[in-house]
Each structure stands twice: as structure tokens, then as C-alpha cells.
Image (cartoon, rainbow, N blue to C red; front, side, top):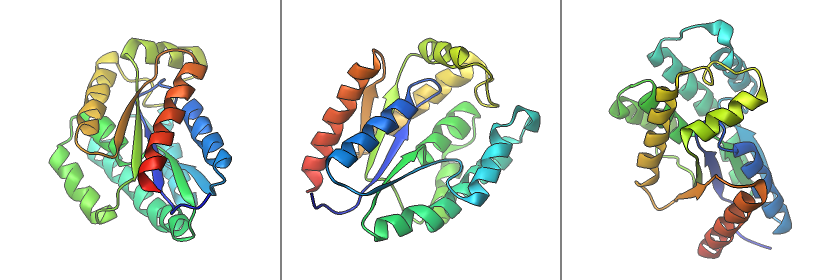
Length: 210
């Protein structure tokens, strides 16, 4: 199957099932005969993975919200330059676990940083580069946190209070209302049910980009 490359991001708060969704997206792309690169944020490059380790490690303690924001965009700028844009230029699709929307949700909504400040830094770091499709997985906060608790040891973000994740969820929903490339997917139900929702969304999207 021939179609031009696209950049797909998977977003959502803790415990929404991003890993499962990504596996569904990857399987679907393979079934369409499309070459793809799967990556993540923060991370995706040697520099990004080092920053990720610092950002997620509970031993890092309290990181100033502005410093945290800058670390996220440092990782992202390197990621876009080193991995994402080169893959797209080669005709590969890119599937990314989190991107800029997570920064608006976590550092903006969760930490309370100015959305305008984030927007300005985004413009400098990315120069208008945005995804073609963003899947926002949505789940009630308590359900997501229950899933996280069942996974065992929590990272630095997962240890935040419930109210933090309410703000994160609200910020994701606000972002999802701003552009045509967003698709909100109900992440409740079994993996099979959610996977069916994801595949249906991908099929609709591909039909719009052929």
C-alpha cells in the first residue's frame, strides 16, 4: 500500500493504556504494509533517554517546574531533529508515545505553568512542527491510578496526588478540542474493545490522507 508518511502521537494521562494502543497502531500499520518507526518521549535519542531517566527517577526529588519544562523540550528538539524528521523524510511513518500535548497537560495543567510560555518555547524548539494525528486516550482518573498501582513501583510523575492528574486530564481534553488532528478515544473497557476503537480511528484517518 502506498501513501505518504505521517506522524502519529499517542497521548493520555497515567494508566490509560498507551502501550497497548501503540501495539495496536504498530500492528495496524504492518497490516497496511507501511514502514514505521516507533519511539517515545521523553527519550528516543541517547540524550533524550538520559533526560528521561532524570525526569522519571523519584531520586531526582523536586525539579523546578520551569527546569522540568526545559528538559522536556531539550529532549524533544533533539528527538525531532535526530529521529522523527529523518524518518518522515525517508517515507516512514512515525509512532510516538507522548509529544508536545503531554507537556501542555503535565507541565501546564499539572504543574500550573503558563500555557503561553509553553507555546512560546514550543515555537522556538519546533518551529511549527506538529503531528498529523494525535490519539488522546481518555479514562477517569481513579481508573487510571488503579491500573498504575497494580503495576508496582511508581515513577516520579506517577507519585503525584490525584488532583494533579485531574488537572492533567482536563488539560488533555482542552487540547483535544483545538485541532482537527485530534481524536479522543474512550480508554475504558477491555483491551480488545479499546483496540477496536483505535483501529476504527486509524482506518478513518488513513482514508482521509490517501
